[in-house]
Amino acid sequence: MRRSLFTLICALATTLAAFAQTAQIQRLNPTNWWVGMKNPKLQLLVYGPNAGTLTYTVNYPGVKLVKAHTVENPNYAFLDLTIAPTARPGTLKLVGKRGTQTLTQPFELKARNREPKAQGVTAADFIYLAMPDRFANGDPGNDKFADLADPNADRANPVYRHGGDLAGAAQHLDYLKDLGVTAIWFTPVLENNQPLTNEGGLMRSAYHGYGFTDHYTIDRRMGGNEGYKEFVRKAHAAGIKVVQDAVYNHVGINHWFLKDMPMKDWLHQWPTYTNTSYKYQPITDPHGAESDRRVSLDGWFVPHLPDLNQNNPFLANFLIQHAIWSVEEFGVDAWRVDTYMYNDQPFMNRCNAALLEQYPNIHIFGESWVNNVVDQAYYTRNKIDFPFKSNQPGGLDFVVYSAILDALKQNFSWDDGVNRFYQALAQDAVYADPSKLVTFLDNHDTDRYLSVIGEDINKYKMGLTWLLTTRGIPSMYYGTEILMKNFKNPSDAEVRRDFPGGFPGDKENKFTAAGRDKRENDAFDFVRKLATYRKATPALHTGKLMQYLPQDGTYVYFRYDANKTVMVASNTNDKEISLDTARFAERVAGFRSARNVLTDETLSDLKLIKLPAKTAVVLELKK
Image (cartoon, rainbow, N blue to C red; front, side, top):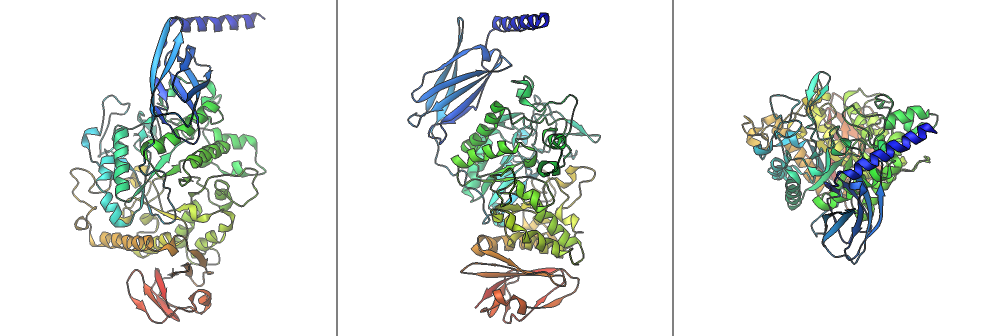
């Protein structure tokens, strides 16, 4: 009883102390909203000293304050609004009162613009993944700021910021368009006002972008909110879509709301620091231990990226509304989700559903780094009787990624070599729509493709041929087209080097044919020719895929529709062979000749096709 009385007195003292202080409103999130959205509900996060002790009212036609929520921290209030279809654009006044004090905070309701947004990416697209800090620097004036937690910019240091930005990327949209790219995916551009962190003895910057510190601010070093809008407008004008990289699982240790958290369960808290195991098996294992599952899901990714608790309804609303706000505010077209499998999956379904309700054409593809088809299918729409059913439309295809690399590195045998690629695709029946998976050969977290395959240019071309002709939405990591290489040793920065020619003072400019050597131009021209052909060939987007069992190191598949049939024949052996096409009669019958898409040569006889060593040919069949 005495303890309860003491606790009550302490709480009362805290409340009285709070009331003795003047209230302020320092933040409203979202920072604005729109009339005419499909979901009339909006939850405002209001933050400032004693913001939660105010009594709020809204007087604006068509806008109703339904409920005001107070939470553990008196510096927060969460306000549930409804915005009627009849509401007009304008600035409403949020009024907060406490005693004799009255605060008025403006909040803008905008009209929705008609600029392109949420167009989605499909199998007709070719995505280019770039790290803005390492791609091109268009404005050296925004490289560093003394008032940020990390004021450094030094290209001589591989793990510091280098100064690349959105303005620099915009200067090379013509380069991307010429290459055949139809969509660009940047690693995150949101504010990462993070201090340097010690990782493996190296003091690293947050140049990668995955440690958000303010959801509603694009990093100044990238060009800020207006710079992002301008980039998206220029990309759309060039016929290039924009994919935004989303992070729901964690935020940066320096995020503004972590310095004064709304409530204790805003994060996943542990008695002592607990890292995720990075193991995905406990999440889907029907025999798994709940303790293992909790560590996988609720453990922190790394110490400087605190793990968000998406079961907190206020946090969940905050994240979902930010996703919708980003699409509407900036006009992005698709949504890549970082560390997808570490999120609370019912929350992810809610978020995906909210995005798809507002933007039916948007594509969402998450990163779930697994090594088997069943686990990969769990995180996307699938045909398996899982207890939980994901509604994610797509996903990054790590299974095909691994299979293609195995096909290029391993000698052919019963299960190895190109059989690995064949077998991965042979299990596509588990997905609701495998064409929505995003395929790739490397990315910012892996060793560079060229290095993995031993810098063999023939294997390089064969893997890219598969990437650009098989099912799915192909994605290529920046610099692959000019033979950038390296392993993640001694750090990830080795596979995230600057694109030569993107920065003032560069001695070489690989954005131009004159700046590339013969081997690099050959690689660039190869990618461009195949990507351009793919762009103009619906059979490679929406056509059916028929593959044949690999035999003796050869692998043959067809992409076809009512108008066109494309045959892709691969020889993974070290010697040239003559491929007898008799067993492909199901698809070849009726065709008399073919055009080699890559060489423009005509094959007048399809009975025997010569396949050079370590080569994949793309043949457009003719009647």
